[in-house]
Length: 105
Image (cartoon, rainbow, N blue to C red; front, side, top):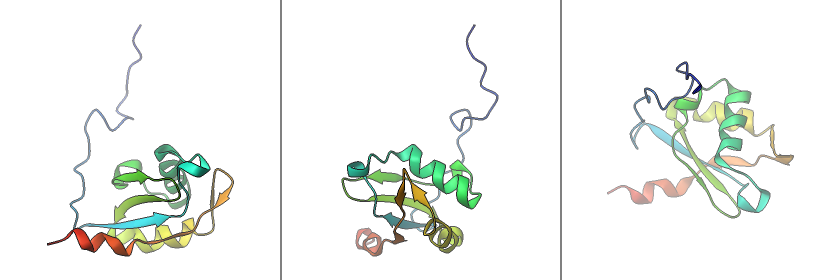
């Protein structure tokens, strides 16, 4: 029998995505080179900060770093808490990504 999904997955009713002006992009110095996947970042942030998955926006995994969007109001807390954590055994170096504003017109 097919497994019933009891609304735990966001796919049933996705939360409205935050607009680009409502999020802060954070840069984490871990990426593909460390075997990091989006789920690792979501799991670490939700597990350590109490955010829920739908509060986390776009995630980009590059070779040496990753980018993750979080709500403005929670960004400072995410940076503070995650800076004391590890992902896949690696210490987390995390900061606000200053390059985001170049995309604005």
